[in-house]
Length: 626
Ligand code: FUL
Image 1: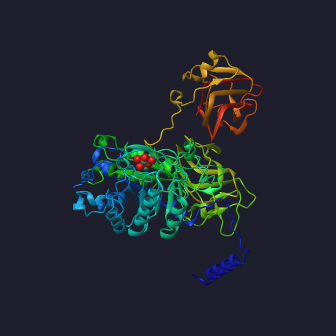
Image 2: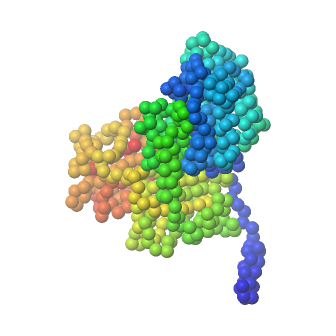
């Protein structure tokens, strides 16, 4: 370096050092424990369901199946783990004991275990073999231990609880570190129960004495994340289909969710006003069943299906726990393994070339210090851009070196300071105008990670606008990609494909309303006034309104600015979204408005402004609410 350059560099460094230290934003509660952040960074990990059910074509063993039937001829945990590594899985959770009570480790606490099976003449230990394979190939290990036990004679009495705790203690002390402990929510009911063959119910909230269990885990495995329907470490996502809501808060209201929570479908969204950090985990099997059934060999999820689930789990601020039903040989079946590995390759291919790498965006507000715009594209997790404390909305604009195709975006909030963003938009520049990218879901929350798939645009400029936030935004990463034209997502705007709850339109004749629901774009329901109210007939969780304008030539009754309101009383609805139907005059295509899921019976669409000033009539070729 020349002397003059050296001097300049030194002067710049000095200036930076003199800059008053800019304080990091205060955390917004609730915030994750550091171990929850590390867990979320795992993103995808495997589940294995394997046991007596595998050999007896069952999903739930009754508790009386003969241990002699557990006889995998070629069991090879290294084959499992090698498959998981190739499929990019960062760990595996194993069903050490499912509801049937059969233990896959040589426990001293019951005879109903692998010691009494022909596998390795009773000397086998699948839990130990899997833990060792994980260690060898460098992925994490964890256990599923079913609280419900259909074999145990004392189930539903205090004696069983002691047994359950002792089992957990064995597992937690003999197999090294676990990253998670999985407590299933399915509990109580029919069972063999030592020959009693009756039905037993328990108080799901208190019976197992979870507080004592948490103490034990804190002491023996402090790094472990505790899964149950309501946490405390991570929560069930409320379905077994592998996806979280596009709106997904990592919060729950403490103490409200426990196994049997009747509003479990809400778990895919979290509680927006929750006071406890309990992120969602999406558990799903690569086959229809959790356990192996030979007739399901032809029903393994395809690469496209798995790819779609990835975007809707990891890309929706959750983790993906993908189950492999190990087969009767004791191996991951070749179809499952091929699809899982190709799924990973597909994701890697789609998200290979980050178009925003090192492009410093222009931001509407910058906190300064370490919290500058360049942190958004430096590829580091722990550096982030932040706005000033009072700033809750902001724009982040990227200029690419040249116009290029884009159809994916990845965004991350710096969650150690809490989950903040409540809504945002993504736009691209087209001939000097900002247009929204075409998505098939709402852009509300971000959280640890948000992945967006949108219809391909060709542009040299992209803009992310944070339109609402719980506190000043803290964004550590934004990336964009062109994934090619792929089959894992559809952006159909065909009116025939519109999904909707059934509804009636208030104050509109049945005959006229039919023109908006008949899935025929050529018929238009016209109505006078500036407001249409949908009655869904009962309360529903709604997240979108679709409006296909009149398709006539010229199109009539076009709404340019809208307001959507919802509620249970049509006379007192709450506004959930307002905005403009961009470019509707020139291109009256299907308009889809997504918002945070909300429970309501009535939905209103109000025309705040019409395209033709003074127009007193709205035209709807199609309307739908989902
Ligand atoms: C459910 C269980 O009942 C299933 O058998 C499976 O283990 C799944 C992961 O959780 O609640």
